[in-house]
Amino acid sequence: MQRYLQRILEKHVNGIAAFDSAGQAFEYVRKGRRPDVLFASSNLPDIGSLELLAALRYLGCRSNVALMAHVHEYADLVPLVRTYNSEVLLKPFGADEVLDLVIRLADRRDSNAETGGREVPADEGRSFVYASKRMREIQEQAALVARVNMPVLILGESGTGKEVLAHYIHRMSPRAKMPFVKVNCAAVPSELLESELFGYEQGAFTGASRAKPGKFQQCKNGTMFLDEIGEMPPPLQAKMLQVLQDGTFSALGSRGTERVDVRILAATNVDIEAAINQKLFREDLYYRLNGLSLHLPPLRERKEEIPLLMEHFLKKYAKELASADLAPSLSPSSMRACVNYEWPGNLRELENFVKRYLVLGDEHLRIGELIQDTTLAATEPITITREAINEALRTCGGHRKEAAQLLGVSYKVLLRRMRKLGLDTSTVSVPVKQRQSSTTMGWRRYERQQSSAR
Image 1 (cartoon, rainbow, N blue to C red):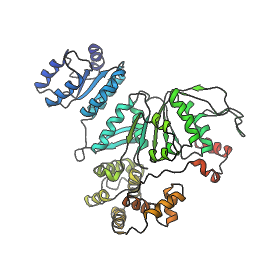
Image 2: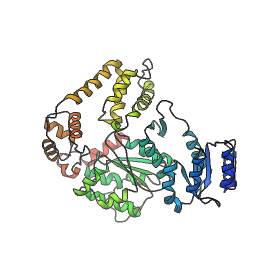
Image 3: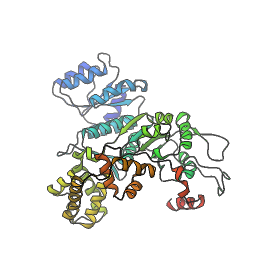
Image 4: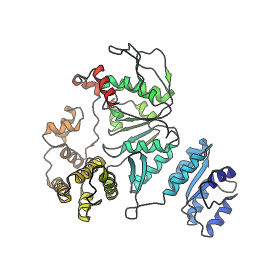
């Protein structure tokens, strides 16, 4: 294994040192050598993995460590990896996996001097940006779970970056070169969602003049991202459970079953436990999806990242919006206003704020809006009671925007009220099926829109 690894690295990396035991490696470190990346077998003859990582830290060596292990050892190594910020390289591995890991681990040394933050590419046009300890832990856990074919459930408020994290997991996984297919379970009418996911045969329903493959067929050997899965109708959840259990499903109108190899990533901003208690979400499906849960905190709980995120969006959109004449950063006073603001819309609101600044200019006007909103939030009295909010949410089936209209306040004001009263802002929505009477889009019209979009 040592010789195989050397042959891979010698073609691309300078300054390789190889040792037959941990003792030899420790002598190398005691002489003041600090390698960027250290590969080690999980079964060294003279020391265990825990003792190896602890000894390296004791010697002051902060090298990024990759433990080479078989898949059956993975579960035992996860606690060590989290504690010592290391990685697992699963056997058997190829040259591309080794080189990608070397680049990723070496890049960890690069950081923003001011914030200690990092930007790691998620896909074309997107980056996973973090600076806080909590988000760094999420990034490390995502990088770990990406290498293992297990479902991941991503939780968090709307706009916290769940889709970006899903793209990042896909990019770091062995399926990175295969398709990444996103389905928004809340955006597609419930009566069409099944055919959108699983496809249909000719004659399966009125208007089905030809067979159509579903997203699962299109995502063969790739990653399926099910956004807003908390909005999926319960009858369809049973079919999804079958796919997760044995990888098989039936298209609408088909008598047979198809087998598909697809990795599932799912995200939602609803309280899953509350949805399970209200019989809106299947408990068995939740446990199938929850191979690992990653909970993205709202932006107001990681304000140290706002300067880095602001800089990221300014650089990203300055050229796109033809605003090269504007400064690529904000003044210190403006940045303080941004940090003090609550950002109820999270990253999405921050991104739109940057776009408005680049398009309209006038930094002081944009910041004035934030200061005014922050002052209003701090001074306005709580005139809407807990009972009134709960009643409005029940009347509107849990939909917060509709509840805000019913109460005669803005959506932002309602969210602030709920936080001040200690109410859960990720209220569960009623299934889309219960509101089908408002859906007027037919099969043919939907198909035309999908074809036009493609």
